[in-house]
Amino acid sequence: MTKLHIITPVKDSMETTLRTIASIMNSEITADFSYTVYNDFSSDANTEILEKKSKELGFNLINLKQITMHHSPNYLLILQRAQQSANFEGAHLLIIESDIVVEKDTIQHMYDSISTLEKAGLIAAITTDIHGKVNYPYLYAKRFLSGSVNTRKGFSFCCTLMTQSFLASYNFDTLNPEKTWYDIFLSHKSVELGFNNYLLTSTKVVHTQHSMYPWKHIKRSQPVKYYWKKLIEAIYNK
Image (cartoon, rainbow, N blue to C red):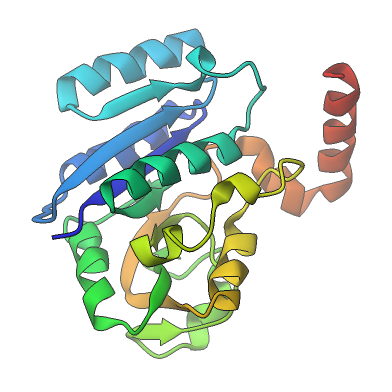
């Protein structure tokens, strides 16, 4: 049985983060899996909370502050380390971001779907609000029929599985270090390499929308403010 590596990148937002962690740890999973939380420069107080919860619940915690001096976000480093670990064990990689709540059977269902889907590269669960209404980033999928939909549209990493076949086919060390987010690029790269990407419209997860990096929402709602902030950061960190 192929192992499954599950990761959650975290940047403060403890209320949603702890809810995400609890939903994963309470999942009913028969697959051989490991779960790692990547703490991307959360505050000292929140880091203490994560360390305490790691000991209580048994998940792995990696504090990026002990690994890199690069300011947050460090999604590239997280992806590279996660891919290296997954490839070393021949495992699939499931990203569940810290503003997502999964059902008890979500993870196992996504894992099981790999064997039923033709040449799967990326497999994503559809996101909804707490009332079950499809929300961002999958608003385009409202018109899709229920089931596993093969689509060339871009995926978010909200709750997305990357198969071992795809992980072994593309080296994340070649990703552009000037970028911050890689979900759309990797979605397209999967298709470019001949894989199929599937959106599981009947597998729903609750998405509370960009709590991991609050300013990520600004990129979409206030782009001028976002890029001005990035310019100032670039000047300051030279």
